[in-house]
Image (tube, rainbow, N blue to C red; front, side, top):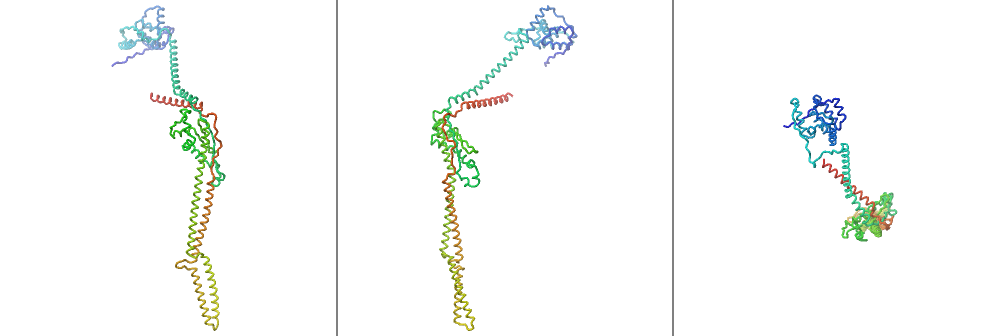
Length: 539
């Protein structure tokens, strides 16, 4: 089992002479070496070995050469420790390197360092006895693998050179990233924007726009005759549904097909003079033509004012004006059709009511005629005659009874006269009963005159009611026909379509700027998405 070598800790105390000597020539890393010397007890206890005598000029020259090698502070501290391990007394870190090299020891070779530590540990275990070490001189490296720092510049100059190199590297990386950013922006933003701008400024066919405004109004008195809140609502609110329906119709495929049949909408936008992006194929379907129709015909409805605004664009200003006038005619026809159905429905309802009233009157009249045919033609007159006859019979009966009573009051009445009066009274009484029975009693075939008279009166009342209903139905039908013939809704053109002289589309600058903003937004979204995905993958 291999154990890692462990270096012993030393506490080295400095004397006044060594401090004065090191203070004069201390360089980078001398403070750490001095601290290690203070903590090394062997240095303080063991006597300093004799150092070969050298001339001051040769020693200073060697130190100057070592200083130019650009050794780091760690290497210098390592050299001082090794010098103390070998019993040398260097005056500085560079002097420690010089003394070690003069003794044939390379202080920067890892094998010597490991042997030094192992030897120091074994010497401490054996009571501090000295052991012989193989002296290994530093070997030269091939010229192509030389990695030592240059010896012709000072550490400060080398540090400044390294800083300049780092700065140049950072600047080069920034320039490279900036060039990559510019290339991406050029590919995804600037070049598409340039192409879009070239299309809008040089290729796009100019479109001429015709603007018009119209509104739907109600006839005078129409709102009041409708009843309810119709007369209290303003015109724009009363005709809001008609305006919305008219706007929807003008934006529908039906209006596009009618415009194509009347004025050749598809033929105009299929001309070769129109650029390829705006041109409609000659064999395009109705859906493709409808997309072009919605693109170049824009309508808007303002509910507060009740005005419908229409903007129509074509490649020819005169054709644009003709298209606008034709669409306004379509809108007027649609407004008439919207109210026409309602008016015709009212006339139809009135006609049905009139026919029903006529049928009821006919039925009532037929019932009255049937009653009159089945009984006496005038039951009331017959009743009046019977009553007058009953009155006459009652009067005669009363007279005969008075005469009979007068005869009976005589002491010696004439029997023949009495018998005659009694016979007359009986006859009159029988006639009176007969007439009363005729008036109040029903026979086997016919009802009584009273019931017949009441039935005829009911039939006459039904006939009178049917006459009133028929008269009201006739009046309603006549009023409905008047309303149907009168136009309740009509379209008024507030702004007539006028052909424009200058093209309104394309708006080259605005469209180019919009394209730039769109491409920039797409690039930013793609960049952010790529950055997030890269961070997620790398993490």
